[in-house]
Amino acid sequence: MASKEGPVCQIFSFQDWKASPDPIFELPAQYLTPTPSPIVIDNGSFQTRAGWAAPGAELDPPRLLFKSVAARSRGAARSETQIGNDIPNLEPLRWLLKSQFDRNVVVNFEIQELIFDYVFTHLGITSEGSVDHPIVLTEAPCNPLHCRQMMSELLFECYSVPYVSYGVDSLYSFYHNNNQRKLQSPHTGIVLSSGYHCSHILPVINGRLDAVNCKRVNVAGSQAASYLQRLLQLKYPGHLAAITLSRMEELLHEHSYTAVDYHEELEKWRSPEFYEREVHRMQLPFSSKVPGGCVSVEERQERRAQQLRRLQEINARRREEKLQQDQERLDRLLAVQELLEDGLLDQFHKSLVELNMDSAEELQSYINKLQLAVEQGRQKLLHSDGAEGKAEVSELEQPMDETDGVALMDSDFPEDSLPEKPANVVQPVFNMAEYHQLFVGTERLRCPEILFQPSLTGEEQMGLMETLQYVLARYTPEQQEALVSNVFLTGGNMQYPGMKERVERELLAMRPFQSQFKVTMASCPALDAWHGARGWALEHPPGAGSEGWISRQDYEEKGGEYLSEHCASNAFVPMKIAKPARPAEPSVTMQASTEAPAAITMVTSDPTPSSSSASAVADVTMVTT
Image (cartoon, rainbow, N blue to C red; front, side, top):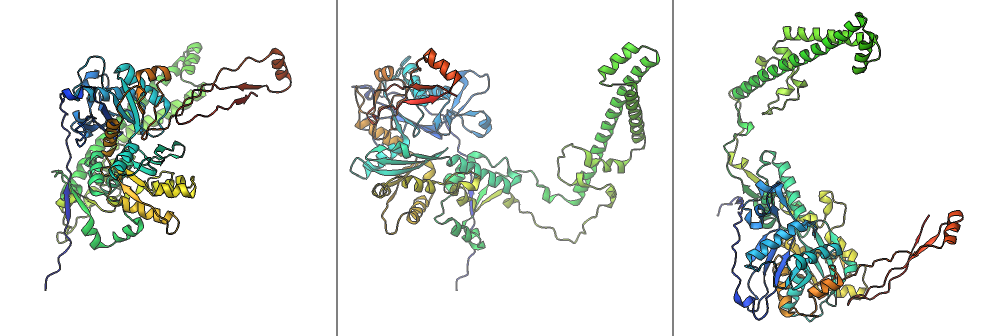
């Protein structure tokens, strides 16, 4: 009969990937003729991906792929800024890292300009003062008009690009995968996107984004990494420096998964056999530092004696300093009192004011107190001994190197009375190998779970599926059927194993009995946005009046916030600028000042309607009180 084998331990090592600098590519001649090829930039809050949209290279990956961060010391020159893969290890420079994003919206355009410089330089563009290639750029869903205006100003004014097209990264991924599946356009569905800083619910009806019903959840990959770091630092306080944010991101990408039923999965982890089989032991680099638990009794007592002597010296020095300060203040007060005895009343009262005292009696009271304090200080210096030093250890605020309990010693127990353990007591065996391992158990599923239950991290907001239910409730039953027939998952934070099954289970509980739905995962959730943008650029070449492209002339005539809509873009809602109110008649003004508030009507101008929305602008009435 075969013997029953125990569970095999799963031990892993951190990869600690080091980034290598990107090469500077040469610009191929076929990307310039007959017309310049578009440059596709997926401007993500975690990673930037850039490459060419050229015929014949549909299967090529993006040329550049780097972290969307820049590191520059205070006062350093612009040329000394490190971008993306120029930083081999992010952790030593974590405090210097800056991003162009606030959550998923670009707000720091100085850093964005540095990112563009990095992209254009490494793609081999050497033209002075301009970039002669059209740009396809991703932006956030429902991107603020001011942010798009600043981005267009940067591209048209600083780089003099001929054309720009803006689109939403998750909609490009939706467009790319629908084309791969040969679905008939226009497409209808609902996109669940989760990136680094936030997640989105994006309903798409007849090939256009329904921006009114889009919703954002402020929980995504960065919150999961921070949550995992906090859990492991609380679990292993001796390895705080080794539990870095970069390693936590590696744990999320390589070792975490989404539970189909969260509570049922947690119950499985209660079993010791299941725990030993599923726990991932992350091996840390060996450190020669001996942990405090394996110090012998003799060494511990010697450390206590050394710390006690050091603390006694600190006590004595502090008492001397305090005695000197009290003596100097006492001498000053006695000098003021001598002015009164010598009859110099004017100088005496002036000195009292400087001392913030009101009378000679108050001065005498302070002198008596200081004389008593000086006398007691001298007595303590003369009669100080070891027991007195131990009694005052608890009053000190000096930090200690070792937590051996010196600060909790009682003065009634002298040093020699410390009980020694008998030699025959069995000491627990310290496992040095396990000390340098992180046991990642339930953390593997608890961190991805915050996408569905943000309350685990203290966030007071709905989870992803609850938000999806709220969005679906805003449509008619027929529209809901059409939307759930194509539920699409994309984004780097959707790559956990079990994510698709979890969404299907949540939808099954959410939808009516025997209703139909279909959930599809992007073929490559992290890169499909770039591939979709490149495919769109190849199918829609830039030109005057082309759908989705903004020319230099459009920018100058319609403003920087203008957006040419297409199947993967935001909906353009132009700004409505109010005309100044007409001055009121004098008679009306006098009547308003004496009887009632005047009603001032402001009529907004009716801007030129866009392709997506042509609605009349209502009058806005403001009543002054």
